[in-house]
Length: 104
Image: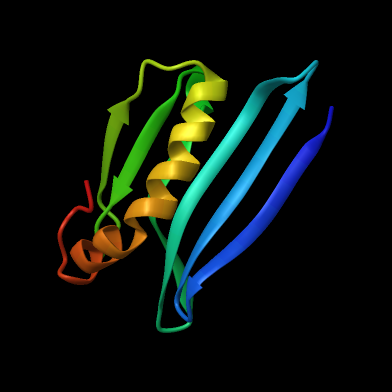
């Protein structure tokens, strides 16, 4: 099972964490997460994953409250969407998070 895991820094205190496994070229497990450093702690802002055996996006506000959005996509498409969404919208999500709002 090939595995990929990496961090991409968007700014000093904003990063993307990416993890996925594949079997026979198909994604079997994934997690892509936007994180913001608040003080000395990295907090999740948006997380895409397939925990609980379905694809979804979790959105967090500064208090750590969570909203879950079901994606209705297969793992491969959800992973692509997650990477694209966070790459394109990290600044928007970060601004909403810092204002105390849910980013999505």
